[in-house]
Each structure stands twice: as structure tokens, then as C-alpha cells.
Length: 141
Figure 1: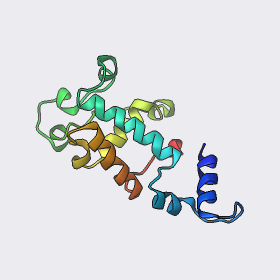
Figure 2: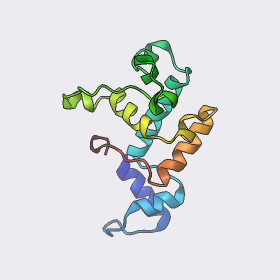
Figure 3: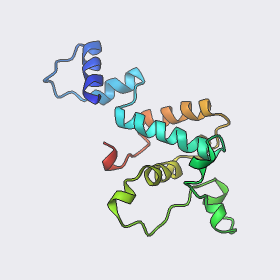
Figure 4: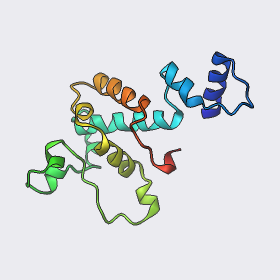
């Protein structure tokens, strides 16, 4: 699908297919996200819904917040951070959806995590991603 998106960008900007121009600057001008950024965006949107209590219980049961683990008032417990186990050794487990999205969600700034609505979260997140501030893991590319 990424190749199709790049083909559309080349059509819009009349770029030659064999030119080595980076599509990212054109994508940024159009306000589009790459397919890997879109996947991350949709996953983070789901994590926001889980964190804000707007997701079904069977999804909410998959994550644990740091303030549920201990009662010590830390920065992560005050910002509704998701607890991530430090003993994850299997690569398959580190690449799992919940683990990856939890890591990405915890890296977001507070003004995005504390958005008052899903629409506001989505808008702020897209702007944050377009400004190249979200680093995606290698297996997401």
C-alpha cells in the first residue's frame, strides 16, 4: 500500500518514478501519514480509548497502569502511564501489539495523552507525527 501512496504522490507532484526523491517531504506538504505512521496512529488511538475508559473491558484488561502497581506518586503514575514489564526477553513478545503500543503511548507528551476527546487526541497526534517527533520501532516499517 505504501508503494501505491508513493505512486499517488508522484502523480500529484509529477515526479519521475526512477528519481531518488524522498516522498516524505511531499507527504508532509499534503498532510499525509505514511502507512507505518497510520498503523501507529490507529494503534495509539485505541490505546487512548483504553486509557480514557472508552474501550471495552476485554481490551482494558490487557494493560496495567503504573498507579495500579504501586502507590508511590511518580511522574509516570501521575500521567496515566502504562506499566511495561522489564523482563520481556522474547522478540515476539517485544513486537506484540500491546507492548509496542504501550511503549509508543508512554513516549507521547502529556498534552496529547490528556486530550479531552478522541478527536482532539487524533488531531494532536497527527500533528506530532507529521512533525517527525514520533520514532517508530524497526518492525513497524
